[in-house]
Length: 317
Image 1 (cartoon, one colour):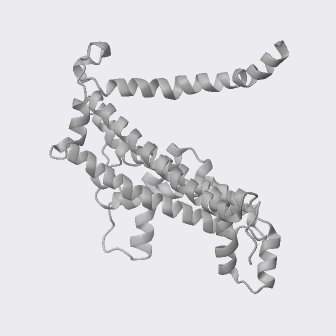
Image 2 (cartoon, helix red, strand yellow; image 1 turned 180 degrees about the vertical axis):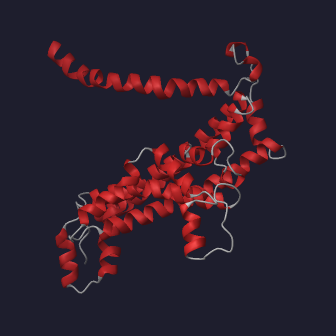
Image 3 (cartoon, rainbow, N blue to C red; image 1 turned 30 degrees about the horizontal axis):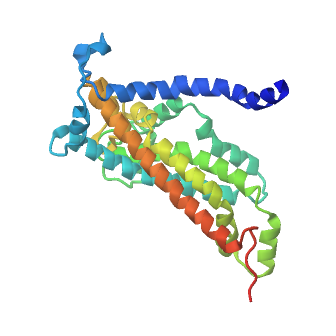
């Protein structure tokens, strides 16, 4: 009886430290943030948060009121974040996939190139982004020196850290930081694709494009489903990159929703409204994640049913 209890209780005992840390680091702050969203927590109650009066759904109504300046600014920030996420995730995945495929064949210097591709991912985010902020300086930055002084592609040196060009600067830095993660994951996944498939396809006359379309991309589909979801969540919630690149004065063209919520909380000292915006962002990400997992799981079940209960395709009659 004692041995059975030990066998049953051992997994829970081993999971206990992880559950305690998850509760302490994520769930408790999340619950506090949800509670703050229902309070009128302004600068007058900073010293004693418990004294802040309950406001019900007033903070949520202010956040989603599109006729008011707060709601309009939040909607504009949401649109900028969606456009930024689509571009950054798409380009990161594309560059990572191309690099992983090109690095499959053995050639001299392949290990050095793989290491060079992983350098942006290994660098601390603050050091990397601050370096980019110096490179994007208008008068003495390396980007304008290359594009304007050397190549003559622009009539005047553009401002990259203010104005409309700040969006392109933010996408560039984010893709530079995140594509090595896609490259690393896809490189590991490609190691499990049997080389015999490519050799058989080559003997049947399949070219490089057909091999990539018929063998490589279908083999990477399960990994890509998880990879795209992780990149989406990281990019949509990214706070460090815009905050370090632009500082507190983030341009309107690069006003991501994470920085917008920070400014709504810590610049205007309205923590109740900022918490309500955070809760809305959490609900949006949960809905998108659930819909994505539902769609991808249905696509997985479709081919399995076609192959039959044992994973084999039904024989042709």
